[in-house]
Length: 199
Image (cartoon, rainbow, N blue to C red; front, side, top):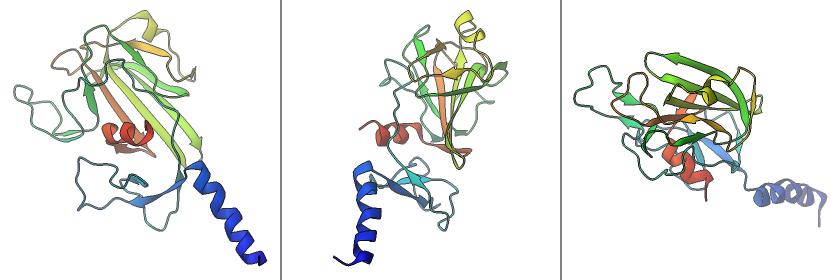
């Protein structure tokens, strides 16, 4: 076999076995409710087509045990009786019940733990895979409990670590976990993110 062909195979075969896929540019013509359209490709809003990136299946889990009960999904919405609620919902609202456990979905580092008017008691975790591949996850409206208050900036967090409990703090219409996932500061549709990585 010619050296050029051997070199090409050595580059392609490992990627095939590792499940690596390139990231394509998000097109405004695509549905705003979908972050991933091709099961073989992760689509991220705002990534330029000339910037080749590589993604793989992540070692993740859902942030709550009862992940099938949700209310507001990702995208544009209208909420009656809540004039201050955002028109574009940047995450998904899980409704497993007040006081249910909230977990970190993957390994990372605590980058924010505080109470704010919108998110209430919330935790933000940074998951840095490389210099140009950084995921961020947001866990909002948590109860004000010691398990959350003891978290500190820079704390290492493992997948499945308890972050707190489902609450109704901040700008909230009822007990739920508002969850967001971002890739390089661009919001993804969490439902599609989980669908893609939890096969």
